[in-house]
Image (cartoon, rainbow, N blue to C red; front, side, top):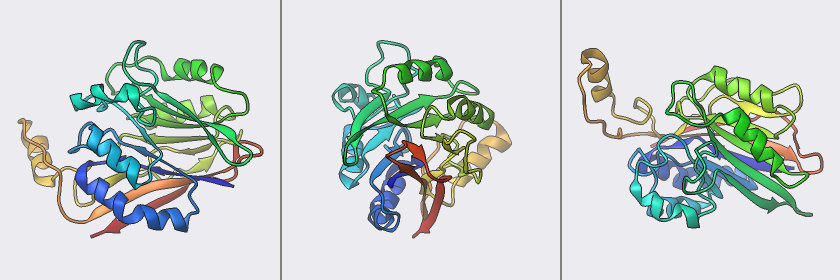
Length: 262
C-alpha cells in the first residue's frame, strides 16, 4: 500500500502554521508515504516565494502544485526553473517558466510516480485545454506509471468531466481552488480515486482565508476593499489516497481530513 496525503490550498502564514503543527501527526496516523500540497496561495495569501516554498518542503511536503495565483509573487520567476518540486499548471502555453509535471520513483521495487498540476478554464483565467494537455502528458510518461493530478478549477462540472475522461488512465485526481472541502469522494468505475475539492489549510473563521468583514462589505456595496488574512483558529484540510503499487490503481475512495486547531 502506498499512501499519498494531499493538502488543500495552503493560505498564507496561518495555513503554513497549520501544516507545521499537524503534518507530523497526520503522517504517522495515516502512514503517509508521500505528500502533495497546493501552494499557490502560500505566501501572504497569494503566490509563492522561494522562502515559503523551502519552508513547506522542509516541513515534509514532497511537491507543491500551482494554479491561477502561481505568478502573483514575481520572486517565483527567479527559482521555479531550478525547482522541479514546485509545479505550475501544465496547460500553460509553451515557453512559460517551470514545469507542470514531476516524475519521480517511489516504492520498492521502484515505480514511476507522475504528479501533474492542471488549471481549469470555466470561470478561470485563460489556459490551454486541460483535457488535451493530459493526453499529451500521458503520452510522454514512462510505462507503468502511477499518475496523480491536482486539477485547480472553479466548476465542479469541469472537475468531474475531466475525472471521467481520465478514469482508468490516472490513479488519482483531486480538485483545488474553491477552498471548500466537498463530500463527494468516490472510486470511479475504472478505478480512479476522485474528490472534487480538498478544501484548504488556513484561517477557519474566514471567507476562503480572508477576514470576513471586508468580504461582506464588498458583496453589499460593490466597492473595492483591501483583503487581509483572517486570524484565529486554523483548519487543516486534505485527503489521503491509497494505491496498490502492483496494479498502480487506487484501492479505495479518498479519505477526507479536516481538523480545526487553535
